[in-house]
Image (cartoon, rainbow, N blue to C red; front, side, top):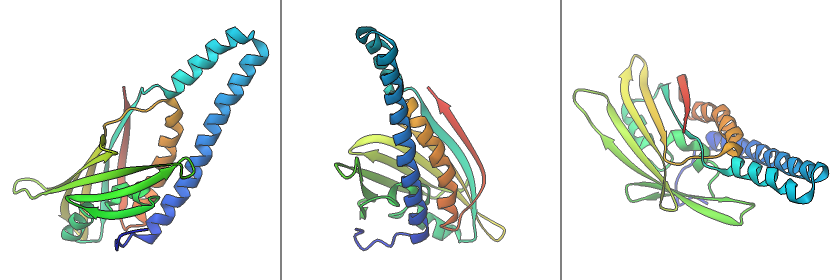
Length: 214
């Protein structure tokens, strides 16, 4: 459900495909951990088998990595339209989030999405606070601060400037949360679909860099 918010359909279709693949990847990772645990019980005494199992689970879940990156985009839309889109209820860089949300709505200073997982057993609220900064000596920018259930999640800064035949956008992404090894395959899957979701909204990805840090 969306509260009278027009959610881009093509981008939503990409996000739904991403969700299906992400679930398969998550299931495969969980299955791999389960198989490794079963093998430990088969080949080791029960007490000793607990050691590698606990170590494997801890290694997979321990928050180790923090992701970030930068992308250069181009679109035929005007700078004014791009600023409005980035500061609106469905910011283009967050298509993989609002595209799978059960509810998308405008909120004071930005937007909010309700996203369910674990087959609907749990729902979180992702909130996006946006700020448009109009500058004289540099390109205008839109700053997005994202939280999940009130906890910091990430930030996006988009510098927007007119170019020949359209608008150029430089987006810098920073994560406020660390994730474990079990989430690494999901990060790689998201990279594949992120550009497709942007393309579905009329944005060409000219260049993209991705970083992992501890």
